[in-house]
Amino acid sequence: MKLLNSAFGYQEDATGLKLLGHRYYDSSTGRFRTRDPIKDGRNWFSYGAGYASVTGGADPNGLKWHDPMQIHVDPASHDPRASFKPEKARTKGARTPGQAPKPEPDPKTGIVTVRSQKMSSWLPLLVATSFSLNQAPTQTDPADRQLPMVIPVVVVNFFPLKGDQIDIEVTGDWGEKYATTKAKTERLTTEAIAALEEGSRFRAYKNPTARPSLRYQVVANYEFKEAMPTLPGQKLIDYGSIVRRIGIQDWVENRGVKQVWIWGYHGGKVDLWESNMASRTGDVSNSNRSETDLPVFNSTYTVYHYNYQRGVPEMVENHMHQLEHLLNHADGRDVKPPERWSELLFWGKFVGSDASHKLVTNPRRCGWTHYAPNSVTDYDWANPAFVESDIEDWRPDGGGKVQRISSDRWAGDNLRWKIYWLQAIPGARHGLTYQGKPLRNWWTFVHDWDKAKREGWTLTMP
Image (tube, rainbow, N blue to C red; front, side, top):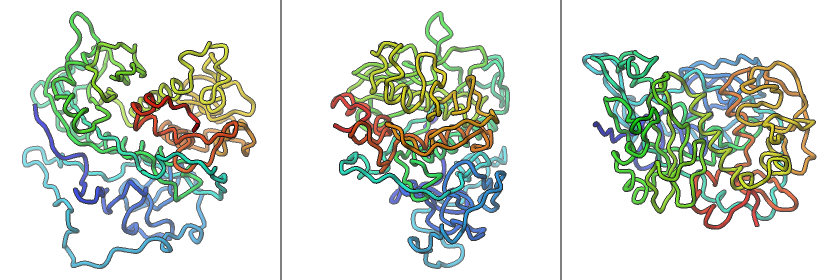
């Protein structure tokens, strides 16, 4: 076992800033601290060329903007210089206090295994459009005064080895070199964090100043060069033995860890759960909800299982399904007769579905993980057909702007759809009400499930 103390990417201890390629990123504001080095006249302090969000294009290396949708923003309306000041000039070659030194490649493999947080080409940015925010109600969620809400994460890696390669006899369908696999899991972890934080920015594609509700912070990284343990006589992963091995009780009860991210495999060799919860109030997760498969403590934690055969879209999908389970539970779907699911705030009015899990409203509402507003089957994210939907101005009681929408809005891309949908979740300062009551910031259910259960939270404020 090897415990890596540093998180993925550089991070200043004192400030929490992350070095992403060429600049420091502040996840509390969703902005970089210095200008984009390409300086092309757009928002120099956002991701890449700075379109503020997730479905308009990408900046793969931090130096050149690519906009496949060929839609542009008036730079004059998004000039950040009124609210941001550039860093003071410093001596060439000098490091900012707390900045990590430049990593060196491994002398044997030539691979730099630390933690570059340079954004990869998946990170597309939604084009900012003109918008108007709903007037905020007089009562707002107290969580909005303490943003972002931090999710401490422990990462656990399983790399069954045969020489310098992953043993495909164990994994079933992955036999790449160990160094390649390790580098991939580090990169995907970094990119998934960026995607999840971006997804927690409420309607950021319309509001460039939207703050992320969540911030994910990797606090430890364990590595086991062996096969994943399974339950006796079964193919199901023994998640309980994994978390006990890393001393999960100390991490959860004394260090505040809320999530465990496990990197492994599937390949027909093992059975797994995408998410699994341990809580004194019961397991609410995308699993069989066993009450004995994980050790339970005073504080809740959730375990996620990722496959290094796959990518960021599947990682984000695991989190989306978990979010759906939490919101459905808080909204009462677990005890509601299926024939009445269409009456529920989340599943009926936000998703626009019923017991069929298909989208049944006209116009369409926001959809769910498997169904975009214009989908006709599961995973139909690239459907070019147009439908009318109010996803970009969803209001529980109706009355929001309805527009024609198709997969062109997220360029038919799996991950872009998922971040776009996540940004529809009522987040910081959403200004939405239902039957006269303000909605909560729904991301608080991810951050503090124990408080939600203890105080009997619903999706609206009292």
